[in-house]
Length: 282
Length: 246
Image (cartoon, rainbow over all chains, first blue to last red; front, side, top):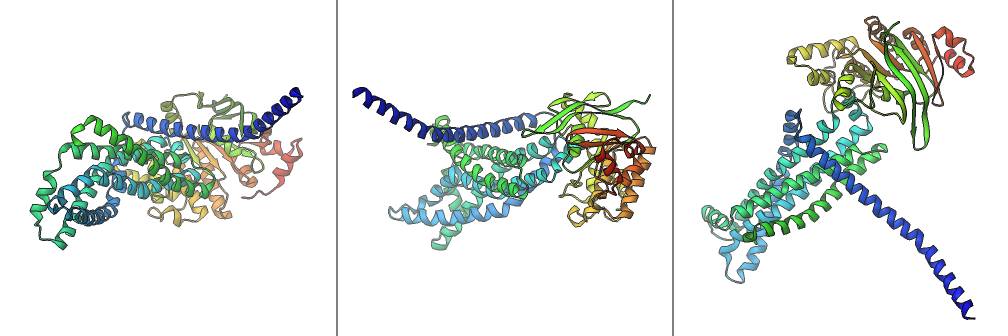
């Protein structure tokens, strides 16, 4: 009898195993697929960095891309920076007024913008404007054989298209972040001026008195890494586009989504690293 | 005996388990014109992409002027590619620059000529294909046939030793098609090796020294047009009797 029950139990366990195995297989395949993709993107970025320092250099194309990525993003980022400055100033005022510390508004705003809000907002906006553009442009070039045509005329398409865009993103992001920060501080001043009588020079004196190089440099330089992320993810997705126009749309959308996620996760790591390397900025 | 410009040596290529080229061997003499015929989807364009090194064979070798394009270094492949021109089936013009700049692009990359000379040569190539007024036109504003002609101008601009042409007459009217055929014949007379993939049988008869028929991944027959007219393969005879799609 005991032997019969044990056989039944064994049968139930076997059935459960059979039921669970396909699910585990699906999850395993999904995770392996995702890890594989992460590996491919990482190798793509590493290859791009390697190619960037190896001649021949595509200076003209890099300059053109910086113009495209950087200059054309200026209206969006200066407007966004200004608006964020206004909003941050209003929120900061509402809080600091309770403690009679309105004079701290410029310093608080400048630190918040320069250390975190400016870099992160800039990176996310650029990933939306530029990342989507790179993904769509390279994706369209892939499906219409323009990338093959470049190779056919003896041009290294990876270097000409991907490396130049990635390098341009790396260079443009810190510059754009500085613009966002500056416009944010101006926005903060405008909001402050609307409700108070603080002068321009006093506002800026108070704002920058609290900011040190260790607040500005690591926070701004980390956006070069965000630029690397945006350029690499978008170029990789563009280069590997398939399935025609549907694939182009997917490359564009995925570029924004993936870049944004990776930027946010990278930001957490970089902030922790910055605080470790520059404890005084904590 | 003339030198071999292009040699496919037992080339096999499969995509997702489907064999597209199955042990294909071909030798094309330098300065000759070869037309590869066959039904759609038989691997003709894939053959061209192997020759220019955009695809690597799963088995076998592809030699261009004696160099294996699948195994040479990137720099050597670039040198080999500079000796070739490639007209893609859909022309594959760079759509962010004008038609003239598309033609000038290889010159800007591979010569140190002054801008004026590059412009002059690109303009001259556009004139060769009947697009002399379209230097500043954007590719999106051209018809399919005009894009094809612009693509041919770009493929010819570096005066390549070997010209690979994918469907030169597709989408063209008969007059333009005849003009393109005449241009290709003149290139052959100047010593350019032509490897043309086409469905246009009358055009192929006019241009080619030799023709080959690709079917189910294999070259089932090759020879002069007269040889193929008498081919033991019914498909080859049927193909040669057709007018083609142009």
